[in-house]
Length: 260
Length: 216
Image (tube, rainbow over all chains, first blue to last red; front, side, top):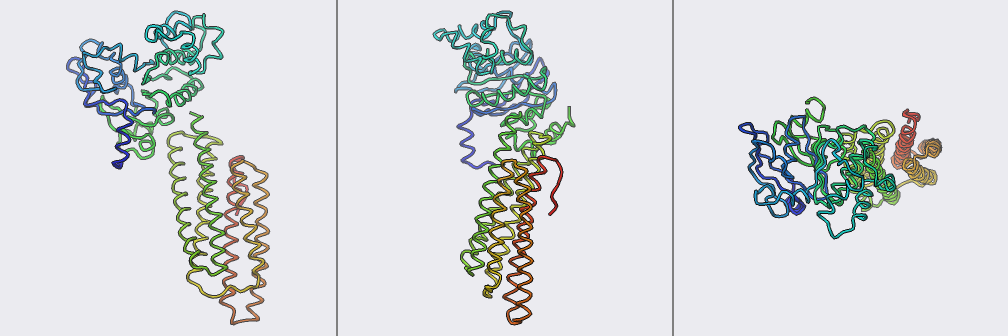
């Protein structure tokens, strides 16, 4: 049980708070009673087997789950003092501050430069695009490789480089939170390692939420973990604690590779 | 995430270094208390031993979490195993200093001056070995680890010298048997501390080769 002081510290570190979030499609519940906090400048891993509700949950954070037909969402997600799933909040404002990277690199059929600068030009109109592009590409260690190829379309890049370019595109908007949905699912071990190192470097500047079915990745990379099963949180806490002495049998089975 | 693992292993090296510094200081303190029959310093040495226990516990916990989270393999795995073993060796050395401190508090016989020079030499060699063993571990210096391990022969020889001198004294001065026994106790403790130091060298070599090449 954390002491009062550490609870207060955690409270002051909270950047996002989900309260009693429920989501159903028609009569079928997909997320039930989700209560969790995300702490600033850390990596939170939402782990669970396929179909456990990871993607559904993190899509609530940038208001894309509600776009799905027959989706019904109740509960609250507090960020910067507002319930961001309130219908009066502009979803675009939320999406600018909570960036999203998906499992497959989804780059535009445009140049590398435009891929990074396009959205940033709209949301950061007073800043020079060249600087935004350079800064974002440096953040993902692609600047040296790509600085002479900015006009090319990104088709020639490896999957890992394309995924890093997607991260650069999200970072160009200067989000407060970066949400990644299984970002290394389709990548080889080397590219996975590069992205994990990259996220470790980025967390001092942007809070990261990562969904993963790979418990080893959650163990390697995250500060806090959430175990999701059948749309419900089985356990959450520090990754140290959850990987050393999990309290839930579901977590124990999942991280031991006995549950999939 | 390999960067993370490297960083954590480096942090563990620093923890071992800090634990070794505390252990070395405590060896000096406990021997000083023993030789000067200083109960205050003996109590301090006893208290400091508990620091070693805390260090060992913290290092073990960190290693366990690292094993659970990072799944180290090959050299990283061996380094982690060696770290656990070395913290245990340092704790054992600390435990021997606590025996010394307790003996100082419980035993009021004066220390006979016979062989004292040999005992002081043994302590010097031991402290040199301990510092060198930790240095070899931190710098992954196999050659130094082997050289330091071989220095244990000096301690063994000095212990034999002490033993022979003490036995000769006992035969001549039977009323001095009890005080002279303290010298045997002292030399035995130093010898055992030397064995743990050799073990530390062995674990350093194990990191490179994956084999336990030095038997203590």
